[in-house]
Image (cartoon, rainbow, N blue to C red; front, side):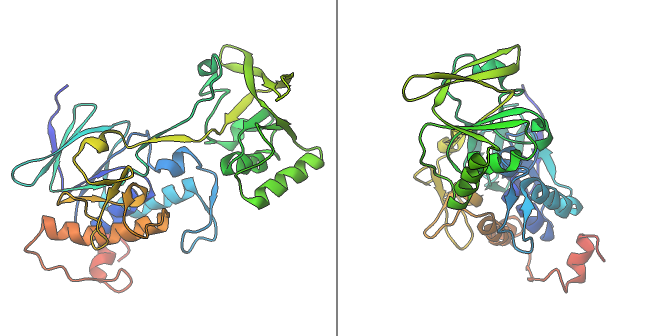
Amino acid sequence: MSKSEISTDVIIIGAGPVGLFAVFELGLLDLKCHLIDILDRPGGQCAELYPEKPIYDIPGFPVISGQELTDNLMKQIKPFNPEFHYNRMVEKVEKLKDGTFKVVTDEGEVFLAPVVVIAAGGGSFQPKRPPVENIEQYEGKSVQYSVRRIEEFRDQDVMIVGGGDSALDWVLNLQPIAKSLTLVHRRDVFRAATSSVNEMLALVDAGKIDFILGQIASLEGEGNELSAVNIKSKAGDIRNIPTTRLLPFFGLTMKLGPVADWGLELNDNLIAVDTEKFETSIKGMFAIGDINYYPGKLKLILSGFHEAALMSQAAKKIINPDERVIFQYTTSSTKLQKKLGVK
């Protein structure tokens, strides 16, 4: 399918928190952005995996949910009118002879820009599906791999399977509203934070939740409505547990996807960058956030924000090489305040 070409200053691949903040930093430098994301909305993993889970290490916010952070970032970048292209995967990136990048999506759209920023988190990701017969028929309704709306679990018979942080976090968050809650794990050793494990065990002792050692054997229900889950113990016994909502937390399969074919220098499936500009091995192409690698890298949203700021300064020099850029602070620059609509 052929579509008209879209020209812009910067193409950002990934609309997670780091990609969104890059729009802000680039916007302060008068650079126009188009963002492409495989999901159907902004926020990346924050919106997809833990929109209501609290985050505690964003400066200035003692606690903020993934969705609130996304909403705030969208509000912050509104003055710069970024354009979003959701439900798209970038299939091809080609650098033309004049230095312009040609980016092609799986929808056949063509984007042209002198700068490309890869802010795709861990690449394309998908939850690991339990090896249970017919689980597909319940997915999206009774079987979910993340909690997007807590209210969908109110007054439901909830079963959570797993022993990591996500499983334990949602045991603690959903227990107050669920009709019943059962945690299933194949062993009595957990990979979650000790405090979360202790809280969970206290709920078990108080009779507020059930904990079963075992694995899913089979599912029961009509259509996409789950009614029960059969759990098999180590001894081979089967227990039938009434269940209307199943949350399996078996981890994520992270795939670099087409990025692996773009000719970039990689380090263990991450994109190698410098620490001055966060530029990749291809001039004009940058990588920020969890998808990049450099010595001392910390996979924190905070780190990605810092990387976005330095990347933006370098991008400006590529796009407007003859323009002298004077560094300014938003607190004191009336010019920047005017751009933000606060002056």
